Length: 474
Image (cartoon, rainbow, N blue to C red; front, side, top):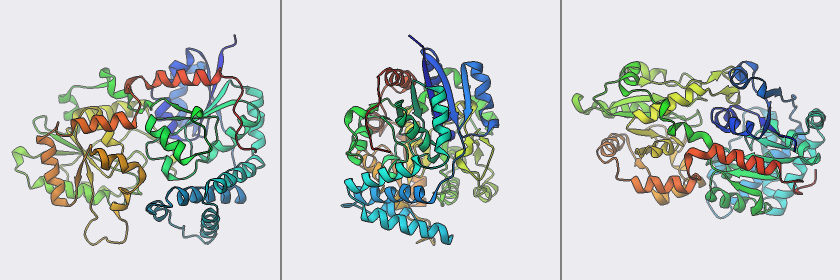
């Protein structure tokens, strides 16, 4: 039997983190060859080309032009999905989708929202899906995707990000050519955010909980088309060889090994008050007697290339900083920021050597829960900033429903409470132990340290599983 040819569509840096900074590629190479079809700068993929050499072939995705009609239907189905799935609940998702300022883009936003509202029922959403597929299929750039797939004839096509515009023609061409396809739902909060851009035979998810969520939001998808695998992004936490001695790690950051460490992890710029919360944390801890005072270690979001924290760090030189080690080829485009293997090691040490994490509802709460360490979610709006952005709406998003039910984290409802919760969590590390475990068990398939092997096994099964299923007509 011929060896399997895996074709991985990697439209952005997220796919690099999950599949190239883990063991997934090594496991795929055990049963076949790997071709990477990517939309990343050459400089950013060079380290990975060196790692596997000729065993992994890298090819750039053809350029695409986002046509007016295609964009209208793609945006309209996102609105339609949100209207439909929230018809009996809060409209927080819609509030977060604000119209752009430019006249042409604003007109497109209004037209897409009106069309989405008119089609906010299952058959209407599926009609928008078909129209989006048809317009994408007939786009002038799609021919280049067909030509490449006809020449390569891979056993299967796997897309690492279900919302990536650049991957749409690749997956449509695979379907038309009868090539099996799969797509990964790359984060725990993605499914409620609107209709996927990418179409596939199989949807790969983190957990049974996420599978139920997908089937709820996509009644046109049969259960047999959803595979529960997990996510490889947590695997570095189980590799003890990556952890450096505490004394060395603290010395490099200017930290005191005798005092506990509070990690403040930043979000991207859609969380605008993160600098305020960091300063509130620093101010609160300064009120603790020096001998007992916890230290603050700040790690910004890898996709936040702004200078918005500079003022806080200048006013609080006692805050230690551990910047992510991502390659920033184009600072104005987060999709072009690419993680490195070195950053996985750095993050593992930040989490391992810190005692508690503070942030605005990010996945880092799970990262710390893996080491059975407490997390605190900031839950207040800064004084004098009313109307700009409401943090309470963030926690009304659907992916926080299990968090409210299980209560695996602490909540800080004011600057004073933030400091109090930090001290409480440090003194009562195991108070929420069972809740943290229940949260991880629900959201991420176990065991966490073997997700790469499960991925490789599922991709092999998909590649050998014959003809693709029939989905919407192009």
